[in-house]
Amino acid sequence: MNLAAYGGDPTGNLLFVNFNQDCSSLAVGEKTGYKLYSLGSVEKLEEIYEYGDTEDICIVERLFSSSLVAIVSLSAPRKLKVCHFKKGTEICNYSYPNTILAVKLNRVRLLVVLEESLYIHNIRDMKVLHTIRDTPPNTTGLSALSVNSDNCYLAYPGSNQIGEVQIFDAVNLRAVTMIPAHDSTVASMAFNNTGTKLATASEKGTVIRVFSIPDGAKLYEFRRGVKRCVQINSLAFSHDSLFLAASSNTETVHIFKLEVPKDKPTEEPAGWMGYFGKALSPTNYLPSQVTEVFNQGRAFANVRLPVAGLRNVCAIATIGKLPRLLVASADGYLYIYNVDPEEGGDCTLLKQHRLIGHEDGERTIDEESAANEGATSRVRQDSTSSQSSVKTSQPSTSTGNALTENSPPPSTTINEQQRTGNLKLDDDSEYPPLAVHND
Image (cartoon, rainbow, N blue to C red; front, side, top):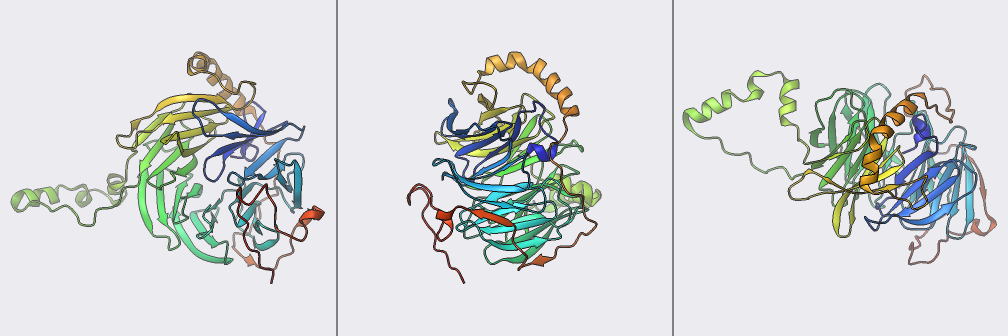
């Protein structure tokens, strides 16, 4: 969640917060550096690393549990640095023609998202393999990259007028399909852990859809409420793809259950009862737009956040062998909720941890409850006056999707020790090396 791309955060200190690919750690970007936290415990938020320079970090992405991090600062928004944080070394840096809005990583690819182009790097030698140019204006850097190396797909908006989603094969470097996901523009998207499903939500409306990848067939459709002005902030699958969480600008986070559709429809009763039951079905006398509402899945579980109206990012993780819903919010807190995978219902707040501003890193639920009322009004007032520190390029009038395979790469600087080989992390057990073929 790049808060700088959305106009900054209310406190002025938190610039970025996001979970890594397997939800084992949390990255936090601040005006004075960045921090990495371990998510192995509910009770304690253990700090893994702190970069306490004066650099204002607006993007920091960690590659799984490795030492590799990709960072971007507000002071140099066009430059990407790839670093080995445990050794405190910079592996390489790239400069791009416009502001970097998002960075995504998996074990084979690194994706850099600009407003009207995307750069696909080979993560082992950081070479630019492919550039997708002249994409529709994407001012927030909305995109998704599958964490699965075998199904390494990229998703990005195919239009800034309607809800089209382009699916691109980031290994074979070819366009796969276009999914007509929604009538209005897409607000959020996320792949599941295996890269075989993609969840999307639109900017107008409360419908969330799940599609099969790579064919783009619609699998599920959910409705997260009745409010029409909801802005979906993030979508997140559980590791087993059985649950999908959706957070928004309201105080409610919904969790949907992706149940396997029944092979055969339920038999209708014979005789007059069957006739009247079929005749009174909503699908026979209501408009199609209304009958769709009856067929949409409802939330399996719900979470109520202490503060509404702030951007946030959610994840479903297994902590202590139990499923937990994690929500990192622009108010500077990480909220951890218990999820009952059998019964669902209202989820219990287990712990909330302060991400910035406190040395102990956490406050108790009772302490925060006492401060919530005053903090809520203060945050909402500040939120209306916050301004973005990042200047993005002006939107182009072009809405095409031209693919340029041999585009000139961005300027780059690579440390001498990294020029001739693969990126080296701590050891082979931390991140097994992959073979690199230079044609």
